[in-house]
Length: 284
Image 1 (tube, rainbow, N blue to C red):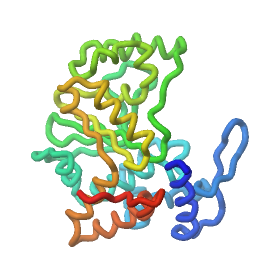
Image 2 (image 1 turned 45 degrees about the vertical axis):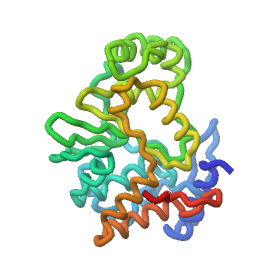
Image 3 (image 1 turned 90 degrees about the vertical axis):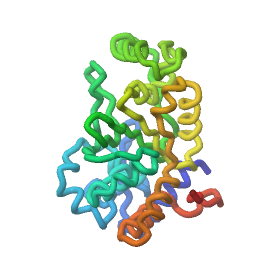
């Protein structure tokens, strides 16, 4: 069973056992409305945010974002991102993330969800799942994956070729962080989503690719991007983060406070202790 299927099976049980919702939710696929047990009925979509911070999040300015069409799916990476980062925002503990990343001097955080690109000149901009400044000039751009089956590609059609020429080719051309192979139009389109993220690297900007280690499809593509699409300088500006290790670090650092209890609940939802018969929570 794939990571996607095993996780959706777990979340279907979670929906009934933990959220007490037995009704299946639906999504439209190829002109049909399909009912799936890992999807919440749309009227219950707020339950996709863990209970301890649910009301605080929806009452905050951070909830003034465009929610994804499939936010009510329990495997929504947007919902997982909010569940991961919002408690750290609420408790002023984003330093846990920067310390995990090896950033020692982070202060004055300015976090947000769904951060639109400010370097792309196009009708539709890349949107990062999470973003924060951590000094007057330095920034983190975070791309979160959960059960996705990899980073998306782009069709080699007129629209995408024109967008590459107008928007991405100039960014790649002047970047000292991207390998020469990224300047190929077809290569860029074949690795469209991950390269749309990586073009945002700069002297003051780092990009984080964050996902469960058990998602081997995403892990393989992220590791390939790190090794093959970046220069040596680029590799200093990109962090490949396994979600399990970040959660283990947060729980270890917060043993004496309520965040440890919260992230145990996060792990219960998103990182069940055993999938495929192996532990998903490695020791640091």
